[in-house]
Length: 249
Image 1 (cartoon, helix red, strand yellow):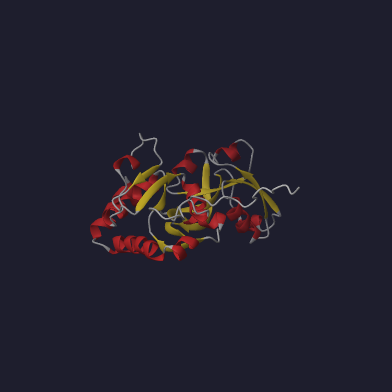
Image 2: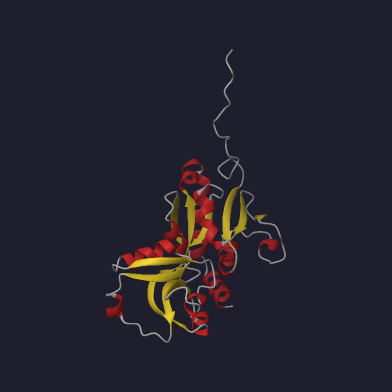
């Protein structure tokens, strides 16, 4: 008697690649606030509860009936897009550099969320590039292990990573690391915790990112989203002024 074998083929995902509204992944926090004028100008503004802090919802309709937005952690946007959970997203270049997903295409620099990834150390310590040249290893606290390893490897230094997701500034004062690598905007948090920026690894802005498979399977719809953002950026100066005002507030 022949025993039927179970079907070992995985079930087809019912994710964002299926027909239905496109999904745009937006990061929570200051980038969401900064990108709002662009979304308004492009006719993609999400429902008001997306922009508030009271709603527990994570998926929202927009002015465009063929587009929904999902609100996720900034570090997760690239993962949602790369895995096909979202067709498009808005993501900091730091996240793209850290994960380097081949499934992602980044066609547009939105010019918002400007900051930098930098190396910082206790203000009490001197920064001597000649001393760095003598190091073979250094302990660094960061949420960017890949970026950090590449930066120090280019200088012949092995970065021994203390992988943290926040409060990097505590690491040197508590003896966890000599240096930290983190996002820096004004530097006020560093100064408040006795640290100073000593090297800039890269300057960061936010990018519009696209899932490559979605671009092939739904090219007209994805191109319309890209062109909508591009047109919004090229629109009347009022849109740019709104963006600057949002970033400075």
